[in-house]
Amino acid sequence: MAIGDTEIIIGVWEVLKSFIPAKEKMEAAERLIKVCDEFGIRKNEIFEMTENDKILQTAFDRYFVDDDSDDEWNDEWNEYEG
Image (tube, rainbow, N blue to C red; front, side, top):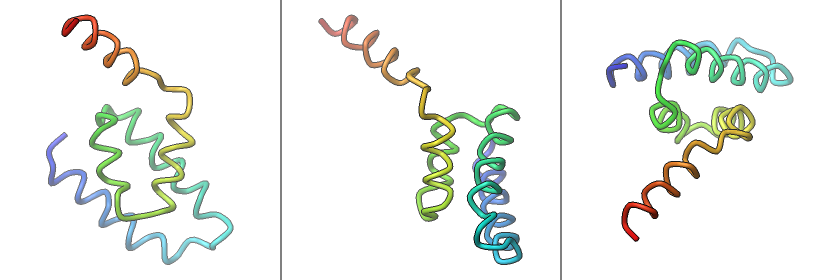
C-alpha cells in the first residue's frame, strides 16, 4: 500500500474518532487495525500509522499480541549471520 493511502486512513481516523463515544473508541480502533490487516497492509505500515495515537497503539498491540512473525524473521536472520 502506498504511503499516501495510510495517511488517508489516519486522516479519516482522526476525523471520525471525535464522533465515537469514549467507551467505544478502543473497539473502533481494534476494528480499524483488523481491517487494515485484512486488506493486506503490511504490519510495519500499520505500526507506523499508530505511532502518534495511543488508542491505535493499544489496538495494534492487542491485535498482533500472538503474532510472532518478527521473532521468526529475527531467528532466520541470526542463523544467516552466524
